[in-house]
Length: 152
Image (tube, rainbow, N blue to C red):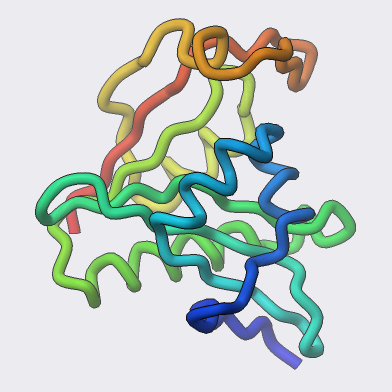
């Protein structure tokens, strides 16, 4: 059965265990989930991925979280989620889709660029300012937010 991606129902809670794979702060995740729209990817009716779109400015939404269960990494599901987010933002009539990821998130940086995003800036020390615990990924201290954008 192919991957099915659907919008969370109004009072449905998205899979927090997946969201926390991409963002270690429960408080931050709960805050943007409450303001955004969550989409769940299911395989055989089991949630294996999730993403959240958050309106930021008129005509702009931000992809604030993309996560795939670890046992499903490397199968192309992350790319399917990102491309679905691009289509969803376009369907909403948005002109711009933004995403940010850590300087240490090497594979995510590659994925976003493969999906048509371009680097537009760096928010220095973002993860130092907003997260109380040190984040290490790929042997790199995650300090800076790499900002990417795509015109729709």
